[in-house]
Image 1 (cartoon, rainbow over the protein chains, first blue to last red):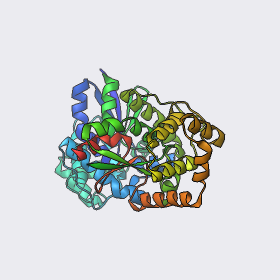
Image 2: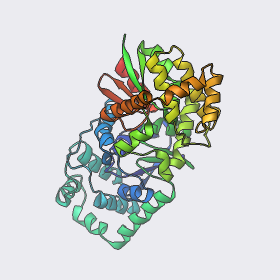
Image 3: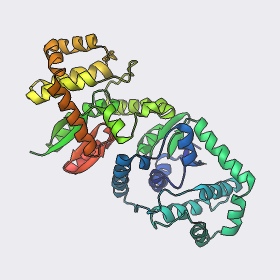
Image 4: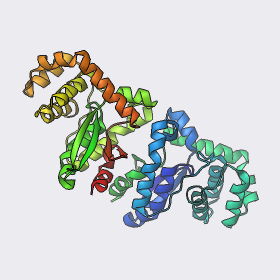
Length: 195
Length: 195
């Protein structure tokens, strides 16, 4: 089966937008996304890049740009007043579920993306994050415990380093073989590369 | 007549790509581009932004991205070994021609864009720049003399400051009324806004 890599961090607006279009991309190409976690803040730091939100004029503009795509896609996107969200815990839990091969990993992703980008929740708050995870049908306390194990911390560090080593500097990033595509606005090129 | 603003600097790869699609955008919308010069390096500095080329991983990626668009558009784009090009003289001459309302302004733009992005010439070199301008049918020496007048220098400074004041942080940037669009990859949104 054809696959492509989808490098993600829940805290990235563009990654949320890409996620809303991922199933359609898979359906159109018959290819399956391989989800690759990374901690975007650490990728920015390693790559000498920064969030567009850190550049005042760009930060002022970029949400309007994302909102245009949300409208085009017909999906909800709300500005999260707690942005930027520190996704360390959320990404560690993601890696726990992926490592276990948990069949409900996609349910977790849906719950987290929606909590941040639709419900505008403060996912920086561990209590609120736990509520969201619990509400989605997971044992939040167990997952948080697993997330704080050294092996999980190391796994996310290694995954993030792998992103940097691969030449990634932002999110989302796609790979089709060795071809890299950066941005939710490049999914049409990903599609072409898969066809 | 409907118009839209096209903020440009010849040294920007994305601006070159946008320029190759500008006539089609005008034809499709019946709107006319109002060319707005700016010195991109100064805009970057004022906005706290930087060229993607300055971020190693992004610099390594970005030309492949531009090349994909060039292929999609069916236009030639060559990597210029002298990049980044200091466009101070070239932008000053542009403002001279625009201020005069020279009907051959578009010929000048074509000559400069092609010299940088198709012919890969070293347009940092004033002698080569003069040859390109002369070859395009202009009195290069007269234009260079006008470009070095204080009023021209001031005009480009003012134009660049106007870009910064408008919230611009990169090139090309389009405005349809007060709606801002950044990037050659947003011309479809510009088109929608004009329709």
